Amino acid sequence: MTFSDLPAGLANALAERGYEAPTPVQAAVLDPDLRERDLIVSAQTGSGKTVAFGLAFSAQILGSDGQVQSTGKPGALVIAPTRELALQVSRELTWLYQNSKARVVSCVGGMNPSQERRELKSGATIVVGTPGRLRDHLERGTLDLSELAAVVLDEADEMLDMGFREELEEILDAAPETRRTLLFSATMPRPMEALARRYQRDALRIATGGGERGHNDIAYQAVTVAPSEIENAVINLLRFHEADTAILFCATRENVRHLHATLQERGFSAVALSGEHSQSERNQALQALRDRRASVCVATDVAARGLDLPNLSLVIHVEIPRDAETLQHRSGRTGRAGKKGTAVIVVPFPRRRRVESMLRNARINAEWIDAPDREAILAMDRERLLKTLLMPVEVDETDRKLAERLLNERTPQELAAMLIQAHRAKMPEPEELLINSPEAQAAARKERQRPGFDDVVWFRMDIGRQQKADPRWLLPLLCRRGHISRNQIGAIRIGPRVTHFQIPRAAADKFADALGRTAGDENGGDVHIELSPDAPQDSTRPSRNNGPSAGRKKGASYAKKPHKDRPANSPERNGVPGKKPKPRKPKKRPV
Ligand code: ADP
Ligand code: MG
Image 1 (cartoon, rainbow, N blue to C red):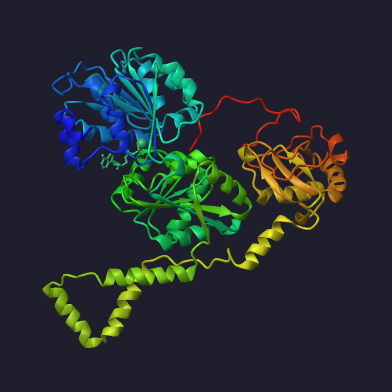
Image 2 (image 1 turned 120 degrees about the vertical axis):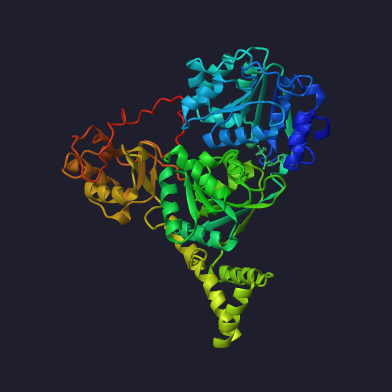
């Protein structure tokens, strides 16, 4: 199958765009025997899945003359997990179908709904949207799916993961049973099968590219750092690679905001992309990257899926991804359409094991290296400067005269030095890193095996990430409540609503005793702290036994009083001590 076998409208659009031949996934779905089949397609990131599904449903929406025979009601629907991705897919399908009389309408959260309603009313062939907004239009009766012939779930696994099952089911239930259903993603984990069984008929699985050995165009590197040096390492990585476009992934919106501010301060042209920005800010951020007004994007995982930014050659996992799939999708923002790219995972020493196992799961071979240091960066700068300054120049008359005047006043060496300095002044300063010196490694090892912490007891308190738990205010609170010093507090694990921490067994009785006495005190007495029956779940150190009984008998409730160190939105108690919270329905992830 080649593009020239396609209806003329599509073939022309592809030729105008400069696409010569189908990618493997495009060739696979274009097999004439599969025209009517439901498909589950997994093909690696950047392999052209958008055009693949765009072409796949052409059989459903084009007449025998290769043009849309418009009925006004949508014939194809594409659902994507994020707003940016839906908008991107909509743009891609718009050019693909520009010569085929198809109307592409997008229905995307954060965009203007009344405009979308108007466009839907005046007739759409292909609708592209995010689950929530599509459902809104469906419920208001502005989206009529009664003649839908094909539906595509792009990044299908992510949509389930984000908790969009209800929306998806409502939308799919509104479409005729005879429609085709196509699921696409680079990763297709197990839970997809239930959805596939329910909403597809006799679906065929297609898997192309990548295969057993990960992505051929992405070079993976893992860079170990001391936890306190993450930001400096990121700065040096950016400076070393000097990518046209780089994307940096953080775990939370707050961390995006913080790192973005730091980078801007340091002179990088950076934009931020997370759920905390308005849609127009988000669109502008991406546009700035496309126009090269910005070269660095700091993002949450909202940008992990599907986005296709030209010239993006560097991905940095500033905070390690939550699973092997996210690792692949984030990294897949580079190495697209046959271009090469680098994905760097910044690994704080204590997380090394976790990253190793994640890489194994994803069958990725990463090169473990040190973060580039100042010398390495300056050496790269010199190379790049020479290359830039030795490029051919066009000199017009005015410039030539100016140059001659300068040469009368200064030596060529002086002028060249000034030129170099001027270039260098535009570059942010690299950081001095202590991170990988033997001393730092030894310090990190020592940190992990602090004396007195080989036999510990875990305690827990009813404050977690939701209450903005942070060691900076937790430590003083614990010292005050338990009459101990900071040095006597070992590992702290902050969970969503509970924080676990270690106290050396030798000090545990005294600590528990003081807790009882300080309950109800002015500062922090309202925080419920008790001996923990278990070590926290992600703890590598199992608790050995239940330790002294003193902590337990004081486990009842303490008087509630406002506490100045705690944020105003402090929550209610975290249920009965020791009782596991009920598993909840997956909540939509805020990203
Ligand atoms: P995926 O969804 O598989 O991650 P995309 O559909 O976003 O990948 O495509 C990745 C890039 O490849 C895009 O920039 C797209 O324009 C380009 N591309 C797609 N198909 C072709 C083709 N046949 N020839 C050349 N480039 C292509
Ligand atoms: Mg895609």
